[in-house]
Length: 94
Image (cartoon, rainbow, N blue to C red; front, side, top):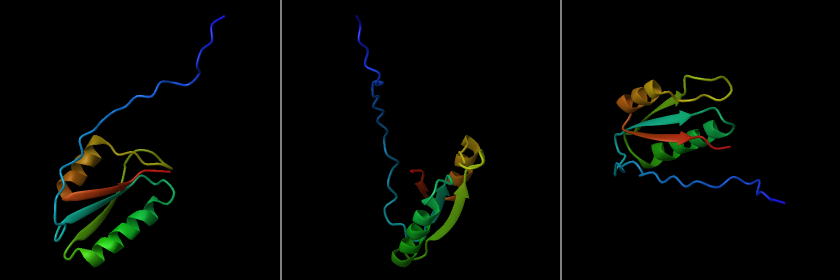
């Protein structure tokens, strides 16, 4: 008799964080929401808090271009956001 463990092995993928921009004063901040519940509320709070504490910053909201109930970001979306923003805050969790 062979006994199998039905749990898949975990994989660990390490990513290098993006370089930090330091002072956000005067920066263009992108707010990316993939339309998961509550993400818009979190991003609104981030923009309110940053508006109060970081002078001169501006905010632009983004959603992915693929999907319906949940929107996925394409490479073109990412390039657009990168060209229009200095930093990005994204909410993608459940």
